Length: 199
Image 1 (cartoon, rainbow, N blue to C red):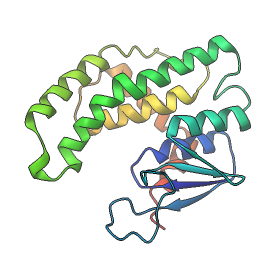
Image 2 (cartoon, rainbow, N blue to C red):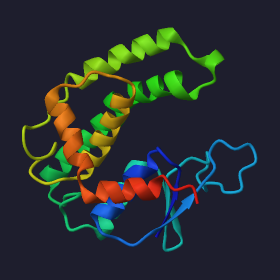
Image 3 (spheres, rainbow, N blue to C red):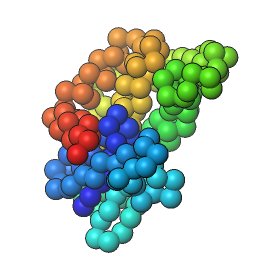
Image 4 (cartoon, helix red, strand yellow):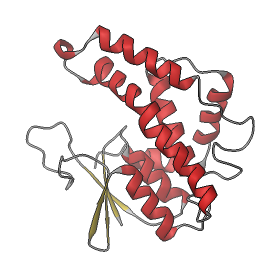
């Protein structure tokens, strides 16, 4: 298996999933922002991540991670039981829509867009939306977001919460501890190191 990656991007979620499943893989770092890139992603929009497995290309982070969990997992990282899977999918959906949407827009207007295209009004609105959404995230005192086992839901939620920290969004002590617990996992450290390679 091979993953097309870019530092500090969503490709970290795929590598984290692969590390949690203890699977062998290679990475192909791409040049997302170069006008004449030497290494490109096969994604139709040249985005990352993309998984290449047995001659097949799979786009979009959640689709890749669900595929890996279903094909290579033991039913814990991505459960097979319908109700447990629904709880994981519930949090995946929340992380990708309600939470990530305002935070990603905030990141673009604070850090990524050219100065002339950044909007203080958008920053203010997205900051407010993200704060409201964060206040609805009730992580448990112990264990993980979708139950007693660490799952894909924790990978996606905690990574999005790391972006929230980058933006200076407020987080209570339970959220902070939850993110720290996720970051202490050996699979996260290995995935982070490999994702940030540029060659």
